[in-house]
Image (cartoon, rainbow, N blue to C red; front, side):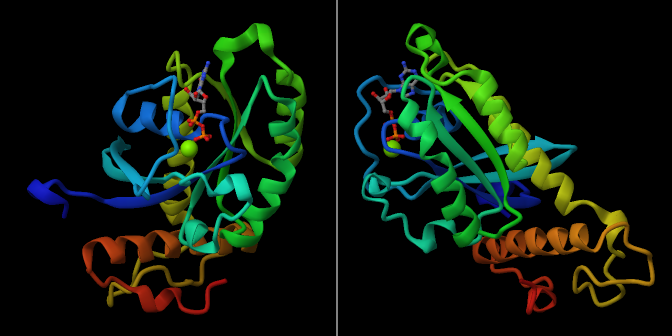
Length: 236
Ligand SMILES: Nc1nc2c(ncn2[C@@H]2O[C@H](COP(=O)(O)OP(=O)(O)O)[C@@H](O)[C@H]2O)c(=O)[nH]1
Ligand SMILES: [Mg+2]
């Protein structure tokens, strides 16, 4: 339960990652508070911001983590990625270098976060079309190859920011709710348990469990409610 009796069904941790000055903090400001600032200073002290959305009649709290500028020194710690089930991997469409660094960020993400994390590649600052240095085609091709969602945004003009987060959150939601891959909790309410059902894909099932367990750990930290964390032990 959140303050005021608002019922929260899920908490999803989503991280923002990418080179310095690509617009991560402004993307978050736009999404969390519908604000934008042209002279944004490095965020100090705030680890994350939240916004609650309704997805398929469920209340989903997105807990979005922003760096405090440590990406400048490539010093983002593993604590930042821990428990994340979604990520926005951001570059600046006017700065080629920020796109060229994406493979490095992707590697870092995949080695520190859950390897099945839902990732959206985001080309920000589309309002600066006349300064574009990365084509939509190049980025789209890369995203396809790496199995990432892809969108171009403008935090300044509020273009696609909402869609970027919603796409990632809905995908996580779908994975968490893929009930046809596992049986419903049987009697003891201890969460996902394999039944005699035939799995369409073992990998899909493992992915489901990992993400679901990550979500549960976060829920646990938030609510103090224990609902079947032990069933997540040994999931890797
Ligand atoms: N024109 C334009 N500038 C942006 C956009 N998003 C961010 N900026 C500017 O880019 C600079 C860096 O943004 P910031 O969010 O601090 O980047 P971060 O280091 O990735 O968090 C700031 O001056 C922002 O105002 C955008 O969509 N369009
Ligand atoms: Mg920032």
